[in-house]
Image (cartoon, rainbow over all chains, first blue to last red; front, side):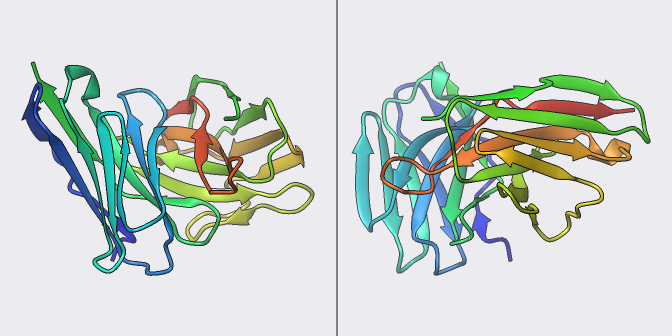
Length: 110
Length: 116
């Protein structure tokens, strides 16, 4: 079983809609979770981190964590074509490096 | 966050040769990591580069194939040895940790290797 799992997509949403990206993890030791955005041909860039149960908002982005269900999500409000990218969910499983999911490709249709 | 310079940005290599990728950070960092991203795939950790000691390799990666140096707290190299087409990939250097101590990773721009 993969430690961090995501649907590969593509997830297609119209411009202005809410995009919902989901991630599950298997290692209950994980305490910290991250969402990275990766444009084609570019390296990943951090957009959100979350460490506690509940929601964390930053601009149009909201990260949600439910440790009991081992579930992390990212909501993107008012989606823009520039949000089209692959979104990688990552967990700190205590090895001091991050374990990444396979990524979900998001397409925002103008 | 730290600024990471990685080179080469891309290269085309012949089967059986070796290539060394360099990673330079603009500040001293404790944790440096090397990841691989094969075409269409996510990031896989190759090893943790430890300053002053041997790198710590993940399952499936060995020192003979991916020797790593870490001579100081701002620099590391990854060598891909005896390359085959299966080694065609993007290799990413990353550094960890932020002011809060959380393990946030910052990535270099990556080195895209194509092995013919």
